[in-house]
Image (cartoon, rainbow, N blue to C red; front, side, top):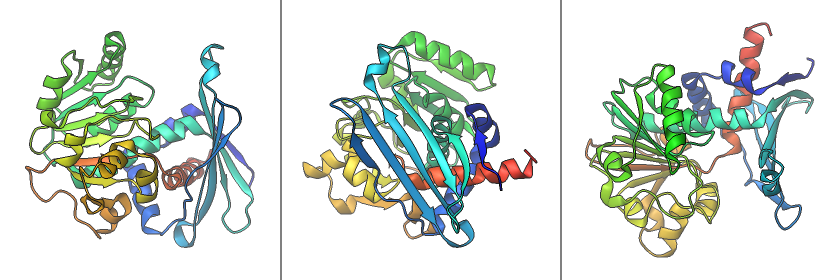
Amino acid sequence: MSMRFFDAEQVRRALGFDALADAIADMLRSSPVAPLRHAHALSSTDSLLLMPAWSDGAQGALGVKLVTVMPGNRERNRATVNAIYVLLERESGAPLAVIDGEALTLCRTAAASLLAARFLARPDADNVLVIGTGHLAPYMARAHCHGRNVSRLRIWGRNGVGAQTMAQMLRDEGLPAQAVDDLELAVREADIVSCATTATAPIVRGAWLRPGCHLDLVGGFRRSMREADDAAVARSRVYVDTFAGALAEAADIVEPLERGVIARADVLGELAQLVTGEVPGRTSDAQVTLFKSVGTAIEDLAAARLLLQNAGADGG
């Protein structure tokens, strides 16, 4: 098989949210291996991240995401984060595909939250709030509206113009989006709150969360980043994408643990356990649930494998 190349647009076209959420669930059931991401300092500011994963059996696959973080690129008017994904044949190690890493990450992050919401959000949740206006935010909006009869989709960002622009883009796609200025009121009224920010201090307050709300935290991936306060974590049934990643890197979980706000037993399960039924998700309409994602190479692997399968089915 010759090696394939997939650009960002090809990735976005080929990966539907439902199919990708199902693919992630299938991959999680196969007991894949995903070491913690390898971070290498190239300088005092620049970093190289390596995210490998592999699986055997029916879901057999092997891949690695390579990510560079170059903050100085802002001054060059270039992206500060760049990524590619390399998919290889599990048995031979032969390269199968090189894939736009950012597009793959955006799609799989949103699909993972959709998968978690199947277990954690109320089935009748119809009021969605997305906090953030960066590249990931519209994907979170689309995912949380997918398969739901959403009556209100609200967008809040520190940059009001950015929120207006994103809301208009989503309205053009047929979603009931509107930008809002009052974050507290929007949170108080929301059934699903999805945070996709780079905040270093909490934005969402636990006191604002209504009974039955599902809080989805996907922005923070370093110990220096927080999106929700301790009260939000303390009043929620807490789940994570992986214990290994979240308990090492998610300040939204680690800091309340270190301060004794919650105990380790209060982190009820990881996404694989929800998928396999090892742990229950939401058990009543009044519960507040929280899903914290820092990203895992397992999701990248599932997305890359599905992308190659879809490309073969299309004859491309």
